[in-house]
Length: 153
Image 1 (tube, rainbow, N blue to C red):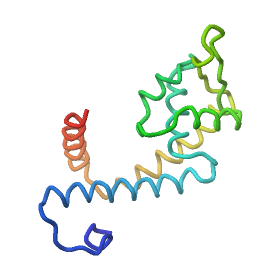
Image 2 (cartoon, helix red, strand yellow):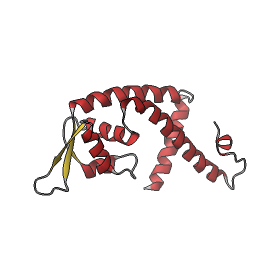
Image 3 (tube, rainbow, N blue to C red):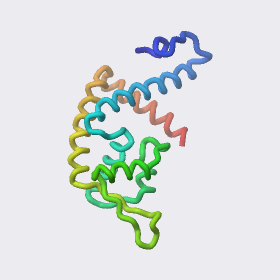
């Protein structure tokens, strides 16, 4: 659905404003799409992100603060998400004996299995969704998004 149909607005004060609103709309659409893919795995997009970060550690533990730095959604409450993953036995949280506020996190075999299956499903569905764009359009989109992200840090 194009932006104008989605928000029932046809005029914008500027092309830049329309573009930003379109980015928000696209983000929301992709979030909804991703939620539907992850629903059978009983994890959120943020939990999926944490499990992928941990899988990338190749068996090494990582601190909560490092996970937070690497999260796509910087507004996530990483400690709360980690606790939910721990309750599901997808991760292990090892507290530092000298400082109980510091903890090292590692993924469990159960977590590795789940993230493998969820990633395969997510990756294949996202690739299918992106096939409306040509390879050149995808490359151009990535260049544009990288430019916008460079300016936001």
